[in-house]
Image 1 (cartoon, rainbow, N blue to C red):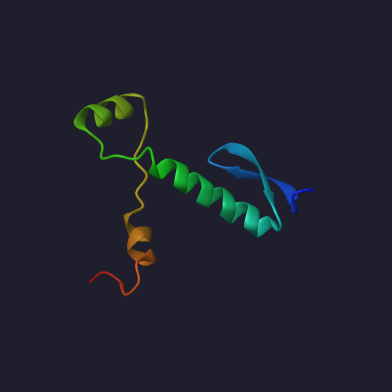
Image 2: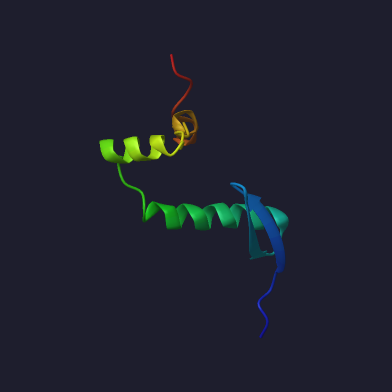
Length: 79
């Protein structure tokens, strides 16, 4: 039996991903969900060595603190 859905190319982070989904919106949301789940397994607090190594390679931090606060229920704007 064939798997339902269509194949979509979803561009994210400078890469293209081939995603099977029923809708274009579902493909985008599903890719993000899949990436989130896989990255949670490999996420840890940064050590000083991590920071020095990554900064030395030109990696800049991505600040998501504001979006995290907006995603939490019951939190309003900062005072």
